[in-house]
Amino acid sequence: MEYDIALENLLDKSNGSVYKLVILASRRALEIAEGQPRLVEAPATFKPSTVALREITDNKVLCKQTKQ
Image (cartoon, rainbow, N blue to C red):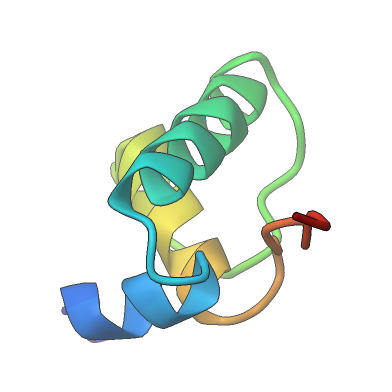
């Protein structure tokens, strides 16, 4: 199972904003750490932050679009 996560792919998922990406990944990682089910298959030894980034890459967790 390969878990290389490219930053370019992640930035596309967060509308090009590193700030939004960090907030999204950290919030999801906290949910996973608190016991929420993982949305992707990953070994139990993987950190919640790694699983959160994989979920974002696989479009299981999405960034909300805001009107400006």
